[in-house]
Image: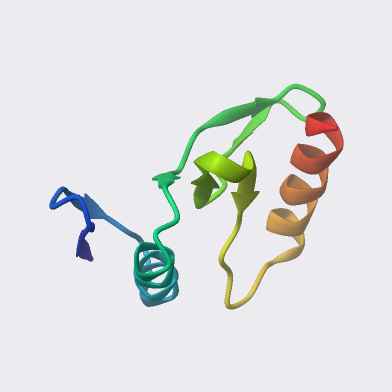
Length: 82
């Protein structure tokens, strides 16, 4: 789904949850970036958190449901970011 950011750029977001979250961030004036890719060396895979809140140095994952595989990736990512 295409989303029109507050800065007039257009970006592809993967779900309606992400569209709503992006709209809230824009309404609140919070600068964000979408899907930075990280290599998780412990299990040789990648992880892409949905949003990076620039001024907060915070990664956000927006999920309606998270499988065990996704939960494992999220855990490994958070463990390696500390």
